[in-house]
Structures are given as C-alpha cells and as structure tokens.
Length: 460
Image (cartoon, rainbow, N blue to C red; front, side, top):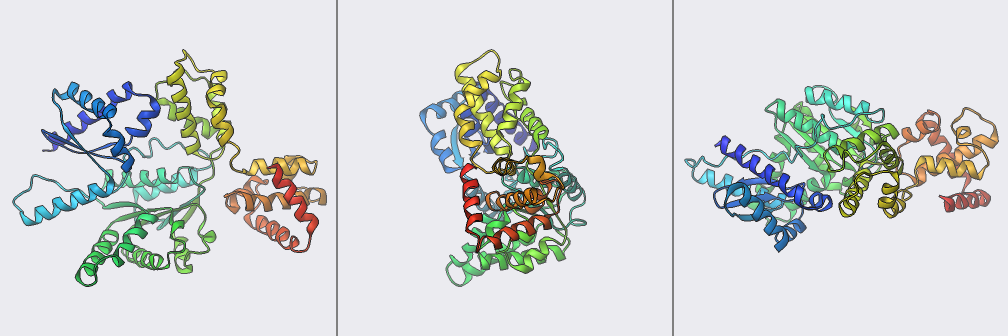
C-alpha cells in the first residue's frame, strides 16, 4: 500500500512539473504551486486547494483540459477530479475514521494525523542572517529537544519576515525525527473552532463538540499557534487558550507561539497569559538587512526559469526596493517573472528590471514609513545628519530631533522598541520609551511642536 501511495505522489509531482513548463510563472504560482494530493485511485484524483477560488478556476475549461491532458500523457487515462479545501479534507478524514470504527475489518484506508504543516518550509531553505540568527538557533534547540527547554518559544516581529517559516520548520523537523504529535494552527482557527461550541445544539452535541475540541488541542506533544495577537478582544477564547496552555505546559509538552509584537506590547491580552509567554524564551526577528535580502532573493530565484538570466545589479535593486519583508520580495520576483514571460528577453539587466518593476516598486516601496525613512526626513528637517541622530551627542540641537524621530518611529511604524533603539546607535529600549513619553507629554500644551510633527509627517 505504501508503495502505491508513494507512486501516486511521484506521479502528481511529475504532473505539476510538466504543468509548470506549460503555463506562465505567475499562473503557476497562483493556481498550482500549493496543490497537494489527497488520494488517487483508478478513476479519481482528490486534490487539496488553498482557497475555494482555486476550485472554480481549476474547473474552467482551460485548466481542466490542462490537468486532463497532462495526466493522460503520464498515465494513459483520464481521471475525475475532486478539489477540496482544508476543511473539506478534514471532513473527509472524519468520515473515513467513522467508517473504520463501524467496520474494524476494513483497514485499507490509513488515517494519519493532520499536522497542518507545510512540508516545503524547513530549516534547510531558511536563510539565516544577523536579524534572525538568535531565533533560528533557538528554533533548532527546541526542535531537537521539544518540551525540555525554552517552553514556550515565543517568536515575534513584524509581518512577512519569516516567523511562520521558522515555526513550520520546527514542526517538520520534529515530525521527521520523532513520533511526537505536532499540530500547527492559527489563533483565528483556534478562536473559530472554540466559537463552534456555542453554535452546537444544546445538550449532548455541545458536550461532544467541546470534548473533541479539548482532545484535539490538549492531546498533542507540540502545539504551534501563529499570530496570537488576533486573540485580542476574544476574552472567552483567551480563557480557553489559557487552560490549554496550562494543560500542555504542566505535561512538558512544547508550545510555540508567534506574534507581530512582544509579550509586553500585547496590552489587550490577559495579564496571566502575557506573563506565561515570557516563561520560556521570547525572541524577536528583525527585518532582514541588505545582505540577507540578497541571499533570500538568490534562493527565491534558484528554482525559477530566470535564475541564470539575472545579474547582481538586479538582485541588489530588488533588495533595496524591498527593505521590510520577505513577502514583498516574493511579490516583486513574481512580477519580474510575469513580465519576463511576456517579453522573453535573453538576459535580465538593471534596465529591464527597472522597466518591469517601475509601477510595482513605486506603489509598494513607500507604503510604509520605515525607521530609516523617518530618520532621513527628520535629519533633513533639522539640517543635521542621520549619523548625528545615531551618535552619542547630547547637545540640544541633536537630542531634540532624536527624541522626535524616536517618537515618530514608535507612532508611524510597527517596529518594536528594541529594533528602534538598535537603529538609533544601539540604544536601550528604555531610552526609546523615555523619548516617546517626553514628546507625548509635551504635545499636550505645545502647539509649535504639534505643527512641527505635522510638517514632518507630511514629508514622510
């Protein structure tokens, strides 16, 4: 049986490889790259899709014919296609389990625990630099000895800088190297499932659903929960997560949590939860620096059709155009791939990249006020240099703009206190807090300062 499963997976992988050669990179990335084989028999292929929109698109004549003909070329026959979302796959597995319980002699179907992990996200393809090295080393330690040290591991940082990749890498490592039961989920999914208890009919159904919910989340060896900040405002869900946390922690089960801000900054999360988030190791990931962004771009290009066409100037241009997160880098590369597929150049130099990305980069690169951007505007406004802002100089003509710049960084960006302090000459987060409070209090009665801030903001 396992040989047949492996063969089906190999056929499906080969099918995707051939489709990749027949459609544009953009189309492949959107509609095919995340497809996963659920099952395959003599007449039917069941495929898991990321979203319901994929089901409709893959059933159109163009893509349906592409799937049929590609599979026919590999197997010499046509199949019926069934496309399911994750929820529908879960329902399918549930039905199989119930059937097995009804007829124990039927052991042809093997039901496996669904970890929700993306097998493509691992330590091998996680690019490490100074901005994420501590998080990476900590993740390796947790993966090798889950439940023994750094429990919980709390990873925080702005969106799109690799937190989710690292969490999946931990889960995949543990799954591959042990028989521990791993579950990845998001706080939104946890909240929605918990809310489902109140949607059940009163009585037996409610109790049964509640027990299934508790068994799912408390009978695991490793719980990975993403974007914990979205539990803000969901008091009852926070209470349930607290009890889940307690049950797992007391049993020495590993808990891994991510957030877009530090535990101290999650002010609307229950205090007893926030205190527990710091029991193990809170570790932050900064936006990747220039060299790390270049390495990430090289990796993203390595598996594309243009990997040998792009020169160093183009890589550095993209790195400079995407200063804050990996998702922006991925979007920029996809745009370049799509434009290249349309124009089919022999090689891709800086002039071609500028033409391909002119509208995309111009729209996105200045959407967010980065620390560097704020420092530049404040320095220009007060006729000093950015190096002055980062220096140890304490004269009023330098200290005053520094306080204003730190205040604006706190108000206008999503960066944490540690990152802001680091970018102002390696200052402690308490210095950032003091500067912020100083300007905040002064604004109450200082209309001149208010006008100054308004003018600086207009230039950002």
